[in-house]
Length: 315
Image: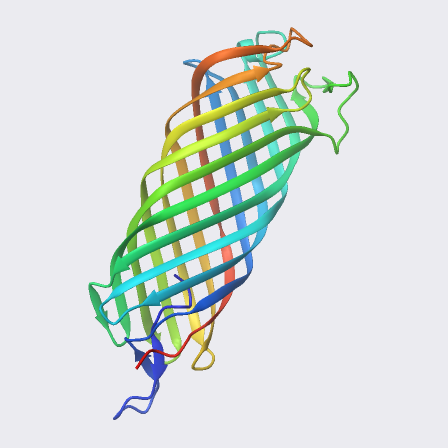
């Protein structure tokens, strides 16, 4: 993953240009100015769609540490850990039928959104194809992703002109928190990794991974209900992850890179319950609901730049 590829360049006998040495060992590296965009949608209902929350256009900035170690036998270990902030997004809450205040029709409310995220992955694999200028092999690993998103303020495009009323029985202020979605995706990763020199000091590397099984957990909090309504969510999931990086070796140890990343995850089964102000027509009454069908999907994509340091290979 990234610049710590374990392919260290050096002058070989009979060669005028530097080239990689396949027995290198990667070291600790850092991705800087990592820019990500994230779009996430949650849907819920009891057999039919009754409510849908969409968090879109969430632009984020995060920092990340990553590393890769390659052994002479072909076994490699790699991973990364990162965290960042989200801003500039939009939350859209769509309700149908019994989920609306009037128990009929259709309602849409919009809010601004921001939040934070953290994530990590760890893989172990084997380079089945390798030479002085390339390596390719499968890997298996673990992926962790958590995101917390807050929605602020409220306006109603449908029905037009309706006012959002908060827990204090006053109109909701633009900076007032109305919703929080906290979700965690933990998944098994199965994929392939490739590292190659394309010309002189230029290189390219990338990963493609399938997430055949994962565990999803979430909590949807509605802060402006009386009492506050909490919707815990659980489920199983699948997904895909991919990234591609173009690198340039500045010195024998320092490498710069620019790349792109795409993640998509979705639930294959899921359920949710409600505790607190579940019935908007019974203000001040604490109620609970039996489990109902719930689905979620998440998409994240963006570009990043990185800098890495390569330790000298063991003799």
